[in-house]
Image (cartoon, rainbow, N blue to C red; front, side):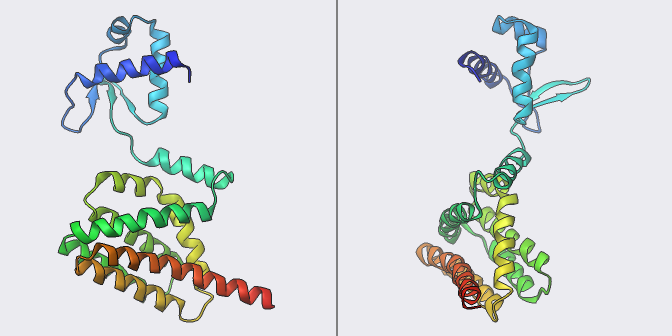
Length: 234
């Protein structure tokens, strides 16, 4: 995108900032003719720039109603990271490293912000993980545990980040669950590590919560190393 294109998009956003959002949080833009006149550009040029916003999920065209700016849902980010993983631009290890960094901060924040309802929801998820005999269900439950931890932070930015990374986080979890399923007692140790995390949250100890979730991630790595050692010995 050229500097000129960036400038037009920035000016469109500036115009939108002067307008009031509707009840759903969307901002209705002026008609294409009005917007082109305000920007001093041709309508075909404006349509090209609006298409960029539509591709990014920032713009919605509603037949018979008009054109709206709104925050995009997370599907664009999910698609972006999913494609980046498949094409090899990012790796499972890199995603896990990022997940660990974010997870530590989520745990620290949740130790301060989580409600009793949040903690009960986390405990319920852990109980479901412990009782599950399906690897697919365990993957989904472990992802939901991380998503619930994000919500317990009471920070919408963290929720958006985790939602945007959801597809690749599931890939990390699926990889780790498959590995620990091959090590006797690993699932039980994984569940106990999660229970220690919730206890640290209940105790309102941010540093202990960070250490507890880090132990969850270290457990994944330790169990993985056991499989590697077994493969080498064979």
